[in-house]
Image (cartoon, rainbow, N blue to C red):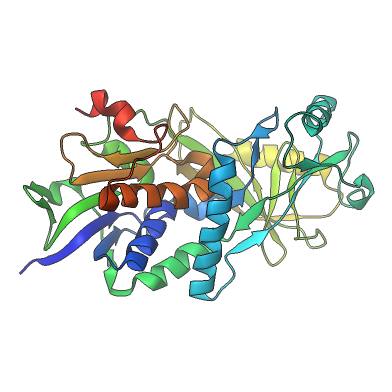
Length: 349
């Protein structure tokens, strides 16, 4: 006998966890299918929400909307699970060059909302600061490992540990069937694995490889995130996440010696404190050529949906666009045009 639910979610990474959280809050029935041994970009990400991006230090797309939304969402999630998930942590900029200092100084007086000066003397005992320092305010750090673990605990009997294979999916007039479960909708939140999904693989995915080191730095204050040519992010205890690379072209999904050597050279050039490398992480991000999410229903098979392609800004984008998709399905509200997969219907049809 088949079990009936309204939704099946594929993948319990960042997006899938938010999807299940909102469905549970709305009292909607669902099952989430996840293979915990599959590589996940979320499990190796830094967890930083930074409103400023790039060498030109411009504001991130939609940040005025998605940042306060995300802060409220993670705070509510934290209150529900009863463990720390979100922490405010300003980014201390250790300017890597005169050009970057000049770019920072320019932005201070041109359309600046999040940048401010700070006292370079605060950091001189920890870093080499030949070009001075600055600060990005309104930044946050999300404990993604705890977020995924807490999300998994909330799922209870709704969680299915299994390898989702498309051959087990059957489309029917009033929804879908997967093994012994029937549902009205199935939502794919499985990162780069959607690239092999025959219904969505035509979307212009452009996955990129990210790597990071986990480094022990005993005396570095953990109240800030630090950014030079690399980012140094508090992880837990006296450990810091150091990275990350952003490779569009890569021959291997394994950790690379070249990346490790590059990070060590960067740490040696700016850090005055002793440190020890304790781990080397690697993940493949489900990015795309437009650097905008893929959110919406399939044009010819409306029982299929996707919420994917969040890229490097996933922590801030995911809560907002997950709820956009669910409200679109349940209430008929519109999805933000730049994120809706309607812009690619010509490819999907």
